[in-house]
Image (tube, rainbow, N blue to C red):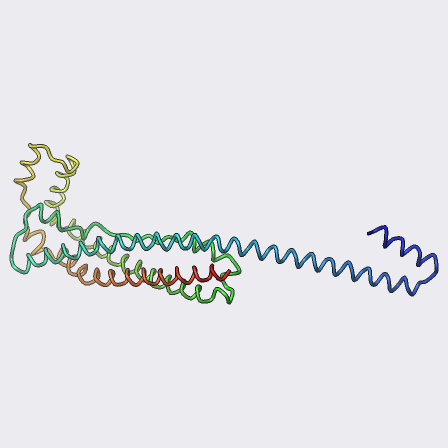
Length: 260
């Protein structure tokens, strides 16, 4: 092809057809420019195709994150429902002036086993760097991601405040020494890996915890129980909202992928 054009140039120069040569030169330049533009267009299309493929692949990671989040939230929700029932049992004993045994106290104070929800973000972080994330075609999914972020962050903030408050109350009990018997009882169980031998079992059976001193007349303990009883139901509701928001986002992403 190059030899062909070179031959035309030589013929035009040899025949002194400078005007025709000039027009030919312009045409050759235009052909080169058009070729470059076509090459750029092809390269851009390839780049866009690769970017879309990567974006769609990363959306699969987002779907996996949502499934993991849902499983974690359901597990924590179940534990919180158990803790809520335990708190009601203890506070009802206080209200009715009853005394719980050490094993009953131990079995119903899971409120201090702090719960932590760790959201999975690897997939979300992958898609944020893509130009397609801000595209119009992804706008509906993007809005649902923002809604999911807001609800999920609200859940984590509420959980953080509750855990921090429980820690403060526990520190207050350490200062007053009102939880020392309870901690001694836990250590006794842990010393035999929660499977007491006959000798330790006798010690466990004879162990005493001052219920009034540890629960009924303990302001820090009552504050921890009562505030938890207020916040936990709210957190259960928010966990359901987070799960529902995640399900809506999942459906939107799946619809987006089907359209492509």
